[in-house]
Image 1 (cartoon, rainbow, N blue to C red):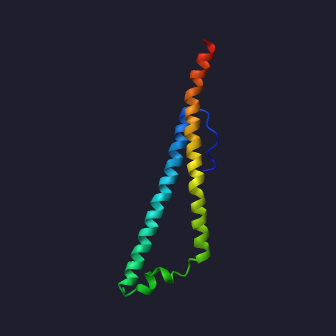
Image 2: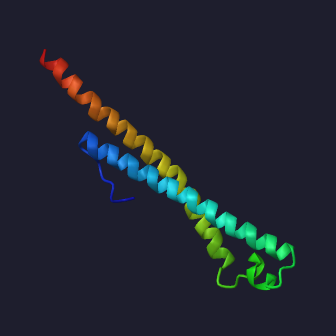
Image 3: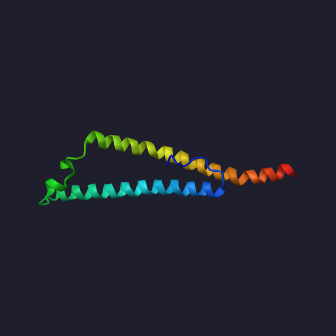
Length: 108
């Protein structure tokens, strides 16, 4: 999201807001998908599925627990950053809408 620099037009600000909201929605959707897969794996393991040792979350060897915690912390830190960025974009949009009115008032 770093490519979203300061916007100068209403259209640019609205597009940046849409991109930020899309990014946040994608993060939420991915969380739901991951949690669904993990829940299904746990369910299969709990039900003594014939391949429980391969689908159970405990036995997933490529995932390092420290790496998982690091990813979780990174994701958690993105949420407030995205929220602040979205708020800033909405404020910028409001300023873009307000400035022309102010300029017209100054001329009269």
